[in-house]
Length: 151
View 1 (cartoon, rainbow, N blue to C red):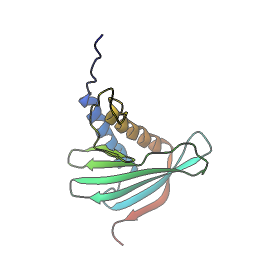
View 2 (view 1 turned 45 degrees about the vertical axis):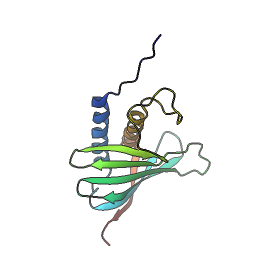
View 3 (view 1 turned 60 degrees about the horizontal axis):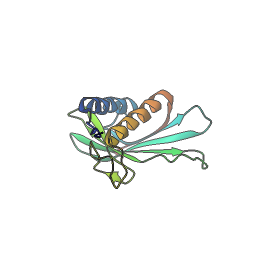
View 4 (view 1 turned 30 degrees about the vertical axis):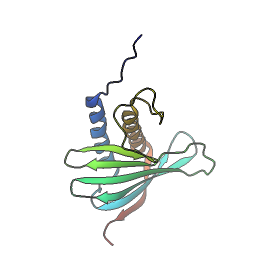
């Protein structure tokens, strides 16, 4: 039996990136005026998390964001990945360009690859960002720590 090759669903992937752009703007409305925003997230358990969205690069049409999640409890078993997101203002879309040390993800990987990526790794990472931003919108609270570019 011949294995079926994974075919990316570009319409679904772009829709997720577009939705991530609008989720980011709901969380970080002053994206062009500030360079860092922190807010807390309380889930169903007692341990809370701190989400930091910081701007690492700003250009007229694109902004590069770094998203970091840290658990308040030191004994947390969960290690959150650090995400770098490129926001395209002219296209109204945002995509993950790296997570941890993994950069330049492809839309399709073969089943057997040395990095052990899933065939739809890039789609999964962008969906993860969407789920994280949605969770932050529902359960996040402001820590009133917005840092501006200008002194």
